[in-house]
Image (tube, rainbow, N blue to C red; front, side, top):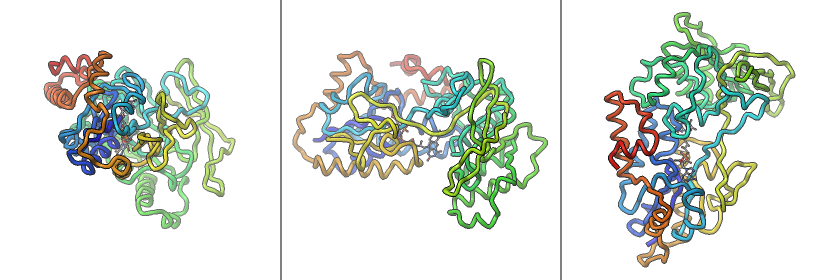
Length: 437
Ligand SMILES: Cc1cc2nc3c(=O)[nH]c(=O)nc-3n(C[C@H](O)[C@H](O)[C@H](O)COP(=O)(O)OP(=O)(O)OC[C@H]3O[C@@H](n4cnc5c(N)ncnc54)[C@H](O)[C@@H]3O)c2cc1C
């Protein structure tokens, strides 16, 4: 019998558990630990609440969690409740699937003003992440700036632009639903250092902006290279550029009170305001021969009382684990950090790729573990989950098991039906009381 701990219950953690289960069958006991009381990582707290078909991948993870030999232990924080040395003592192998939850800072003057918010915090707020329940983003302002040209920027723009009716069928938390319903934001601008050909936005997400009830997307025709050059792009990128060209060609719909403007070749260089964000100072850029954006020295100012930076993420270091500060993640070779210690998903590769990109990671690391610790019917000599349980108990930690989480989810669904504010369930003591634990 082998014992493996996977730390982090997002996609990478679940794909690794699935792959290990397949490789070892009944010969493995897997503990999936998470610092939060609930599983699924960014599927729950990152993916937009109006993208329910994407969130449905959690059903696959639920099957994994219900597989005999696999336990979910929520509310267990590696680095606070338990150390890596302790996990390596109890388990044959430990897999870090802790993601990249920290916002990369803008690192420009004024980026610490109230009203400047990283996307992990903003997205966490509208998705009910307990760390951001009290964020209260300023929505009493008319202009919002979103910095970054990826899908997260599109998610943030769309959520700011939607009418309450457009959230029907979503699982947006009540505090965000109410605040967004009362929002004064009308002018949303998305800033990108490069141009339409360089966006990291996918066609489906871009296309959605063309069908919003109360907002028109705006793009300047002058930002495009000649149409013939689109042929050089790969098909997905070409489709994205087609959407942008169609936005540029359309007349803004005067009946729609909100706008989502794309400001390409634009690099924010400062945020200014009297005690809070009020304006963004932006430098015009141009592409150099290698395709990099270079500042032209020409600057302009645009009103922005809310600034959401969507420029990427990094992982926090964990005591006792090698960490590459410049890369913002755990250095590894093909997922192996050091003897018996592995990394998968965003903790391994950094914050890139879609949910599915994490699957091969999990399978590759599971293969490496199976090669290093061949399945055996003999006891491995490690204390495994029973050892961890005793340790956590001695520290007064009370892990939330998968069955507890299922009760929490059922209570949330029922609460949504009865109109009970879902965010009341976000804090752990309330959660556990609400499900009778
Ligand atoms: C805003 C946003 C929207 C996205 N939308 C999409 C989308 O629509 N479609 C798509 O394909 N991809 C999307 N992605 C990408 C996708 O979410 C990621 O590829 C995926 O979640 C990465 O998986 P992961 O398991 O590595 O990390 P995560 O999903 O972040 O999971 C990490 C887990 O580790 C836990 N953890 C962290 N530190 C510790 C610790 N010290 N101890 C215990 N537990 C810990 C966390 O609580 C979390 O549950 C989105 C990403 C973001 C940020």
